Amino acid sequence: MMNRTMTTAVAGRSSSIRRMRRRTQSTSVSNLYCRTNGCTSFLELDSDTGVATCPICGFVRRAH
Image 1 (cartoon, one colour):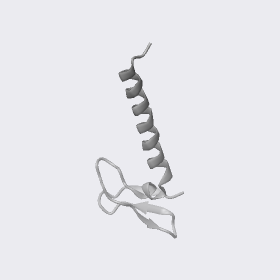
Image 2 (cartoon, helix red, strand yellow):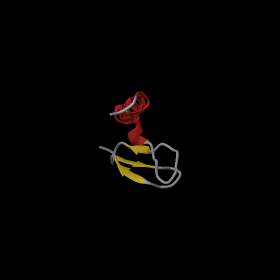
Image 3 (cartoon, rainbow, N blue to C red):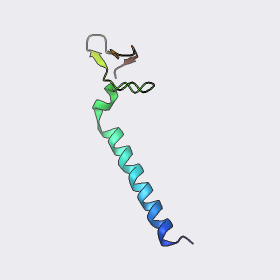
Image 4 (cartoon, rainbow, N blue to C red):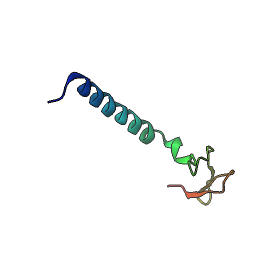
């Protein structure tokens, strides 16, 4: 049986996980965010080829 503190902790954790999941899935802009090894820049999209490139680290990703 869980006590009140444990119940509150579990409820708080599950709601924060849901919040984090909503933030990462709902924003399509986050697909153009580099995120490689601490690189905090946005990818530049070439609309002709459909390839996004990071100007800082050179990471390349194919846009969907």
